[in-house]
Image (cartoon, rainbow, N blue to C red; front, side, top):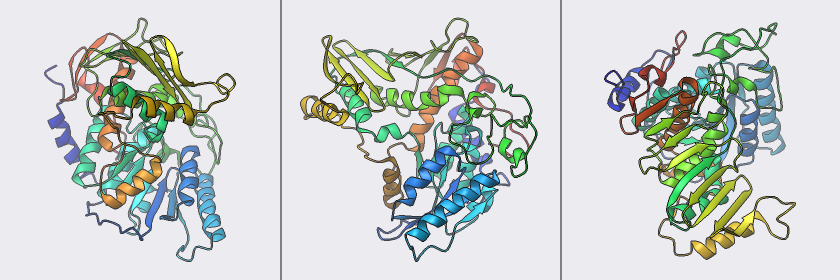
Length: 448
């Protein structure tokens, strides 16, 4: 389409967006020495970031000094968690943890080196870009952005600021996924015929009924760049809660399971296919697309199709000589119709373990492998190492962006139907799509 935006145009937009009034000025990076602690701030301290917080609190090479959330109870609970832990450790360097309602105040602090972002999806890009321009390195949860335009803008902002950005696609730092992808990349199962990825349904428009507003939540700020919806505890449960809220099932604030579990599994599929920083060239919607819960396809330049199969095994590679199936804590290699190494169900696969089967597979089939993939044993540690060395982490911004772009393209198939052709180099539809699908209408001052 003649009016579709090109990648070059997106970079121009990115340059303009990083000059928006709310974004802090760019500043240079200084490499941290091995004995210097990296100072962290956490933005969005719900269920996901509570897990990250607990992990980083156990690392002596970092120190957490600030947390931020639009919900008073959540941010005060996170502040208390940090202060109690460092108090218990009798950390003499710790001077207290500040709790902020507005992320911009946290980013204004010069002592903070890096931030961990785990807000709802519609906030990811805006906060990450502001953090990058404030001189911070970033760990941002997947899906990296709410739309394709944001993904390209975020790459530009990361490179412009010479920053480190780790996408929270932690499956890349798990051995079973790396070995599965190395088997595929080294031709152990032969030429790949097709790939299946298993996860839930696409998002629907928000239809949650309005509930009475309780004090202590800045609902306008929660909605931010998205539409100002009637308050619903389904979208933002009050206080400290133990579940993942259902904002992710709405198109206004998330992308359904396509950008949730799909961001994990499509990421692994593209790693195995060697499609990092590339993506599909064709997107095919299922019949009755607006009712379908699976069935969309991504077709890559190689001709290999990736099918969204809601009842599959996680990530499944089908080759001419065998199959590789992988999921969290699960792995199976099939050659010539026979299961060679398998740990899938602990009640069935007794007398062995995941680590044993994956290690044996690696020794037997990958000892002399020509293709060796990035080996990260811990996603958080990998990010910290990158902050020190300034080398790209295992899930650099460009990888996270290419994954989320594929997720967004798949969602567009469910939202609009039909068949679309896509140019993954120029990041534009060449037929069947519309440039307006690449972005969203932003509310108020929040622009990308």
